[in-house]
Amino acid sequence: MAHPKRRTSTTRRDKRRTHFKAVANNIAICPTTGQPHLFHRAFWHEGKLYYKGRVVAEKEVAI
Image (cartoon, rainbow, N blue to C red; front, top):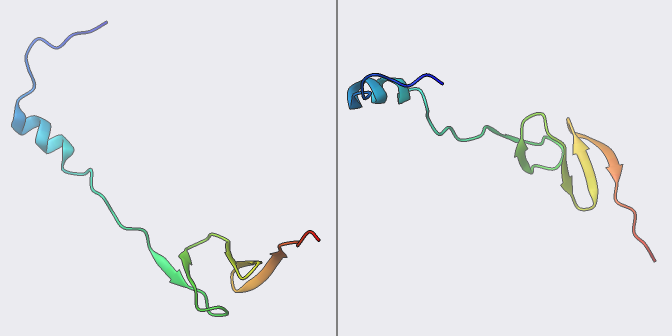
């Protein structure tokens, strides 16, 4: 296994790490329900699964 001959300087290390950033997720508002959700994701609202503003599935209630 290869080992470095010299210690990596802090400047060189920090230059490499400049591109690692924490980015907040984009949040969309559903036109049908008005609920916030992540883009390209289905979400539950009042027992119904919505995707692209349409009901995709409904939660069954066991009696």
